[in-house]
Image 1 (cartoon, rainbow, N blue to C red):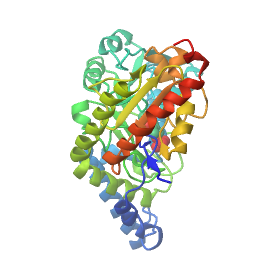
Image 2 (image 1 turned 120 degrees about the vertical axis):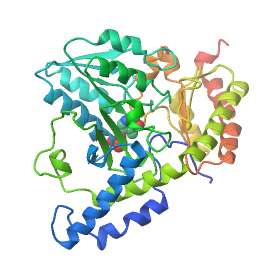
Image 3 (image 1 turned 180 degrees about the horizontal axis):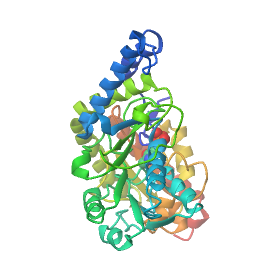
Length: 387
Ligand SMILES: *Cc1c(COP(=O)(O)O)cnc(C)c1O
């Protein structure tokens, strides 16, 4: 059977060029980069080369990059790092109601420890209003954390505007850019952020490695102790092969991103146009223009997203209802509820995300089978009977 992967927002396959770049670092170049002997220094050079590649992509300085175990750790490190360091100044953090759980749960934890969190609403396209950010700032606010693009509905947030407000008010700005880095330009100086999170496995690098950008002068406490790796900002022996893989992946992304984004947005726009034409009562979730090039998210009234997924899977198509982390919970997505979908509609959503190896014929195949599946499920749905 054909198998078609349309779930690139959950994770991407590692590019074979990335795998090749990583290979020597398991066996030949295995030294501990903190060791002063030749074995160690060889590994260190490779790691620093990867740091330069990432800094180049972000328009950052190399000493502003700290490698982590992924996006979740980067988000946690930013939030806990600032919360601890600036607790004497205030204990108020502003975020949005559609963040990834890596941000939301970190904020929930802080709430239990005396911090006050403002979860800003979004409009029906998923956009945070910078005016709301400004209104929410108080003298106790120490951090604003708003994602660059949402992983479920693909909406790209007005980070530059929010950063400007943060800067004017002397508040640190963090952005979870896990969905954008490697897919669209992410320049830390244009975005104006103090802190930014990213993860290699979302841009054809390996799983379990990511990074946090920390602007020079930004005060954050470390939260892993036990070594002076990453200039004392993140203890633990460095994941050299993973970091080398991240470096190769960001280099490839830098070279190919523009072309890939152009092709992917043509596939996206085709689906956005054709799905409502071939399936009644289907609604696009997210913004029509301020949107990731590889994200399509639709709600189909009267049926469950999980049933659509299972039926697509039987046809060899892998998609998602939302984020990979929550799709086993059978709870409606917090993102779809935040954009105002009623519970019954929030259950009937389908996220299709594509990437480097997606072909036009894969979209043809989806377009061929999706209407049949929706139709079959609706016939079985008691909700649909009255229609
Ligand atoms: C995938 C993802 C994360 C988590 O990254 P990991 O490297 O899997 O820990 C965080 N935020 C967003 C927006 C994501 O899409």
